[in-house]
Image (cartoon, rainbow, N blue to C red; front, side, top):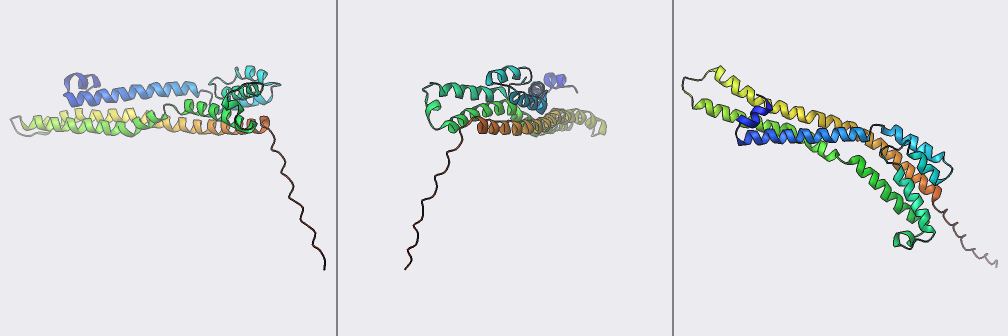
Length: 235
């Protein structure tokens, strides 16, 4: 029995299960294709973008050079945050630009840029994990319901119980389990592959943000020397 036949000739529960699995399959493949396009360069583009930044003469030159490497716009937001923080030091009067010292302002700007990039990288992962974990059970539900309906129909027939009367309806019901596995397996594989790539990119972006803070932040003030201890008076 094909999916189309399940949707047209099955009862309400069978049609609902088949429609749900079909929707889960379409949504997971949309996410897989989108994330494959987003992460098409993997960590290579991030490493090339970071190298291009450090080889630039100015922040403006770095932003221009990043356009050739940072196709997913993962490194650029951190550079823009540094430029915006530098512009804010010149006269911006917002609380974010005036509260705290320079290191604190840069930390806020870099944290916002890093979180924005990570949200883009991790978007869709929850959907893939949910589809991979629940699709087999949804298919199993359709199979159990199909077997129940098949046995109920056979019980009302006359002429005795034979294997040929059971094999056909039960085999058709097992299609739902196969459909559930076919939906779940690509989602699980994509979740694992994308999770590994996202983890590597996240580590590189966090290291880059730390380097930016150390390079463009203000140096800590030297610690005050301890007070001189009085010389002991000899008796």
